[in-house]
Length: 269
Image (cartoon, rainbow, N blue to C red; front, side, top):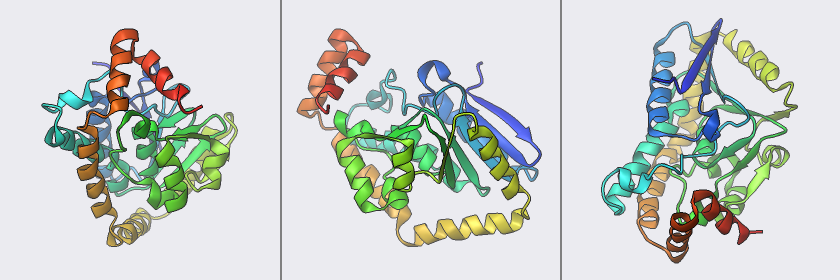
């Protein structure tokens, strides 16, 4: 079986590379399982102090794999089935957040939809100048499984992106606080790993307690409850066959998925 997560370790830093470059590292169910297992192993390994998460090839990730029939994978396309789907997606995306060790996202190319949410669950995000960010789900009558962006960028920036589904470049992502730093493509990996090793040089007990305190700050303000509210309401939206969704499916069945995506995108130019 092909490994969808390549694991490299240097000293106390472990690096997970999502390995689906042929699909721009889109998230499949098997990838969800393999990456979740990798995070659990890193969390229980006392030699690991810092985790770096990136993608093989030119992209961090294009979101959930649209060639998968997600709506019917969990039973009938109704609110309960969609709720199960969204709940499982949130559980997956929470892996970096729940890992007791610091997790650094290293982002190049597309970082969209579920992949964008996965990156926002990391403690820190470093991006190359090639990076592109966004959550275009709303254009397809869907909502993000995890409404985490307001906690990262603040309400106004999150509203602007989530209401429209617009995609922004790395410098705009830096301006609104979606990433910590932007580097050239050539410098991205060296700078990311340099910082990861600096953190790994700190006593792990202190760093892990600091992460726990930082997470608790958000959780005590209602972080977990807000994510769950998003799941409940998202299930109602995604189980509804809106006019745009029906027309999108018609184009996809007639001309293919890529053509349907191009058809929808043209309406936002």
